[in-house]
Length: 205
Image (cartoon, rainbow, N blue to C red; front, side, top):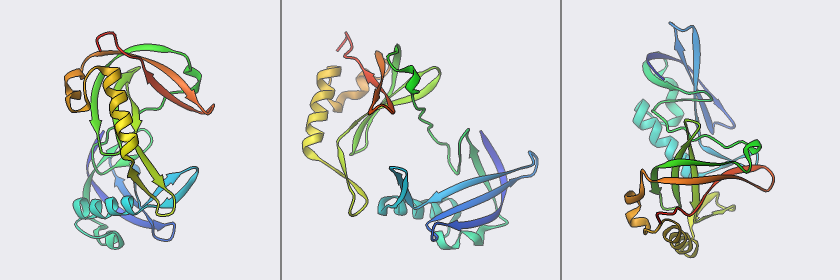
């Protein structure tokens, strides 16, 4: 939900100034809303430095506050629009991807492909389950721990592109042709804790 013209009342820096917590006052609702700008990524239960995430945060500061990360406090007293969601708030309208529950393991459901994107690190296939947006990823990038960054793996990319075409009957370049088509998805659990959607090969492929 969009809440308009909320005053920025406080900016607090945490984690050695790698995270900024921006607090906005919604006087009408009697609420304080927090927006987090974090230059670190969350991985395996810990926050780690990320050059890529830091660059994104710097761009957000410029785009939404017309200042840099270290000087966000200079905008205290100004008013901004804030998008609110169940578990977080944002300066922009966000696409919320729901997670499957481990308890649903083994369930199979029919749904419709909402979108297919290739961001240079993975193919993302989005669809709905119980009116919530879910995602199946075909990852082809590797994380390099020493420099805290993801890199495309060309061998994995070729394998995933081939797997995509074999499953859906079209190359990734023509993915738009199958958006809107029906698919069957089975909820599976990896390593006894990560629930995910396994898309079955459609009859129309």
